[in-house]
Structures are given as C-alpha cells and as structure tokens.
Length: 341
Image 1: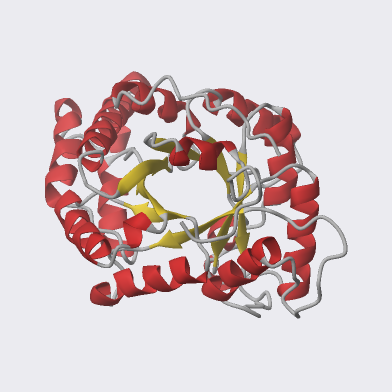
Image 2: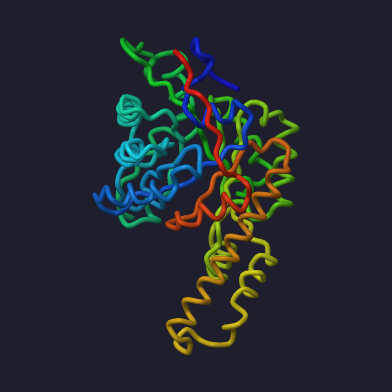
C-alpha cells in the first residue's frame, strides 16, 4: 500500500482503512446531499445506511448540480455516527480552495477523501458556469498524499501544525474508451498515492473479470484496495438508458430482459391504461428484480481475485442498501478497534 504511516501503522486510521487492512470485504455506500440546506435529509439518509456499510460517500455536486457541500453533509454524517468519504472534485475549486477545504474537513473529523475530476458543468443546472480544473484528479491525489506523507502544501511550504491525514481514494472507469488504457490510468492514480479505488458501476461481470485480470498482471491489487461499483436497477427504462447513454457503462441485454420479464404481468399496457395500484405493483416488481440482480452481481464480484469490496451506488434510493447487503451476506459489518496514536 502506498503512503507513509505514523507510529500506529495506519495511514489515516479511518474505519474504512481498518476494515480493509484487516482483510474484510469492505462495503461503502453513496449518500447524495439534497439540493437545499435541509439537514434532516442527510440525517434521514444516514439513518437508512447506519450499520450497513463501513463508510458513506458524500457526493460533491454530483452531475454538476448544486447540492449541499460534501464537507457540510459529511459533518452531519459524522454526527449521525457514520464515517464519511468526502468526494472532492477539481471542477469547482483551484488548488488553494481544495487544500483549504481539506484542512477544514480534517479538523472536523473526516478521514477519507475520494479525488475526482468531476462531471463537466455543461451536464448540470449551471451549464454556463466557469469551470476551474486547475489540477486533474491524478494531480489531486498526489497533492493530498504529499500533504499527508510529506507535510507540505502543493507549493512546497511545510505545515507548521497538524497535517491532514486522509485515506486517499480515486475512481476508475474500467469500460471507458480507450478500454485498453484503463488499467494504466489506474496505475497512474495508485502511483500518485491512491490507497483505495472505487469503480464505475459494474453490470458486465465478464468484462470486469478481463479488467481485473490486467489489474492483477500489473500488481495493482496489491498496491491499493479495489472496490467494485454496483447499483440496483429501478426499471427496464433505466437499464436501457444507462446502456445507450452513459459512456463507459456496459449493461448486458440479459439484464434488461430480466427487468422486462419482471414487469411481464403488466406488459402491453400503456402507462395511462394502468390503474394507480397496477403502476405501483409494476414498479415494486421492477425494484425487487433490480435488487436481486445487484445481490447476484455482488456474489459474483466477491469471487474475483483482487477485489477488496463493493461500493453501492443506489442513486437516491438508500432504502435499497439494506436488502442488498443482507441478501449478499455482507451483514453484520465488522468492528475493528480504533488505532492508538
């Protein structure tokens, strides 16, 4: 594992790091902050996820839509008794702002950070906003690692007090073009200092096995913990949309056919021809099948050498995490004692 550990042997000592280093199959989940200042939304979502995962990713203006900040939401998650993984994008901040925010996040008790480029602003609700991209995600990983391991700001100035010690994460998109380059880009992030990796959503297990085979041949699984991204489908339409419109996502036709089959009792009728009760029953049938598919994907992923855990992205459906983790045999979550400094 890359990085320099202090006397207690941990890079940051976060719960996620402790679980992974103890050899457990880790579980992280995603919590999307609201498009408002309503703290109750965070507390309610945290209550749904508590006890089901080892850490909770707090997205940073996901899909370039303005939401409560990841650090603000992360503080609320800490208060609720969960451990946050704050996401930090290069889209909205320059290196001064990022370092400043990381100092504040560490002071508030946050110990995990996921370094991202960030979706382009043209995808969101402020398409004419000016982007920043002062540094890219690999440079961001390197900067956070230097803050932790060398005690320096990006400019080279030394800290005069406590350095921020984060367990550093980065993202991987195994199926984004050019696919053959993806393992090498992953290698760059790990060399820059990434300690754990969370991948894009995985639906095509055979394609992911081929990616992991290359990862293993490069020895990357021994240098960073790799968590495979998974998420429940809500409907056949969602599955088709992801297959046809989301770059780097592979959704096999067989999964779309399974989702269609789940709604077969209501097939052939338009939305306006179904009663309210029938529409609800169809939606519940689709969701149940989507959860079952996610459970089966996790069970297959657990058999792949080099995968250290899963990252569950339910996308505004946090209620699904409980049946997924329970169905996949991921509960109860391990409890690892906090390190002594």
